[in-house]
Length: 53
Length: 242
Image (cartoon, rainbow over all chains, first blue to last red; front, top):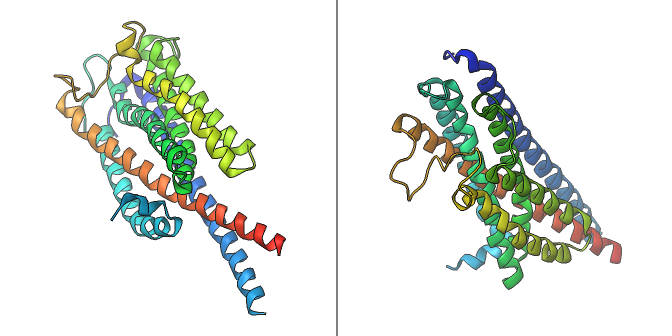
């Protein structure tokens, strides 16, 4: 850990908040992507089942 | 091969599916290297002390906040002129990323400003234009969410994007237009003789590359999500009709 001197709180809080926001954005994007893919797969499966009947 | 082939959703899904893992891994690598290099292996600035390390988050996020809007401007214009749905969906997908980048730029700027300027906030031209850009991002996303018809939503948000572009450009050039306020000039510029010192410059470039690649990876991922949502909506509507 580098010696951040009297600005340690400033620098660490900037990094902590920014990285948390970035991780949040990536996690939300991945979660939305998975949800959309699962929903589309479910609808397509239902559609294919209806077609084959 | 023409670029307009990627306006075909199927073609876009195929190509983006192949590109996405590579872009995501490169983005993670550049971010980790740039931020670790900047945080652990660069010296303090003689005036700013260790707060100079915030530059590796603040400059790339501010740069992407403006460029995300410019990307939305280009894709919105493509929608208005050529009516390609993927283009409109790419603009929609980019907005939350641009909003996040603007938020990080505002927060890191405020945190840095307190010890350096003696205040978290000042109604300085660049800070104010960035705040307005942030509000434009919120308005843009709210407009997409408020209109049910996707084509109407794409039309109206495209027009809003054209208007908001004034503030995206102002955010970039506010310091040059109004030679006043607390915010200093650009840290990096192609037309300046001097940028920040090399010891800060090189890790900053790697961090910027990481943010650019992260933006690209997230735009690809989110556009794919929007295409799937649109397709699911169309199939459900067809089911109801039959």
